[in-house]
Amino acid sequence: MKIIIRTKKPEAITTLTLCIGPTKRAFYAIRDSHGLKLPEELILRPVKEYKEALKRRLTFGRGGIGSDGKYFVALNTRCYKSLNPSCLDTIAHEAAHVAELILYNQLTHGREFDALYETAKEAICLK
Image (cartoon, rainbow, N blue to C red):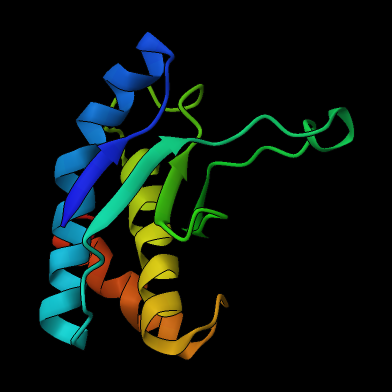
């Protein structure tokens, strides 16, 4: 699985580069434990700026499939300047969402998601 950082903001590139290792560990653990077929590429990018009304809601991350058909993990690089426990937890959470989408074609917080999330957390030493 190749991880591609997609942003032009230098400060976001620095933060996202730190996140590559934990992201790979989360996905490989889910592959090994749950039979996930890894995507060839995963886009790692900052969370997009939303309309003014939605800016009040703090979003730590998003995971899914983009309009280009590529799977992505997006992180709020304004909140995460280092690999603190909150950042690592968000990586595990969003990796579980992407894995759930690939394995079950759904984005939930149900039983399947919980199992994937626990695996990802263990892989990046949050358990």
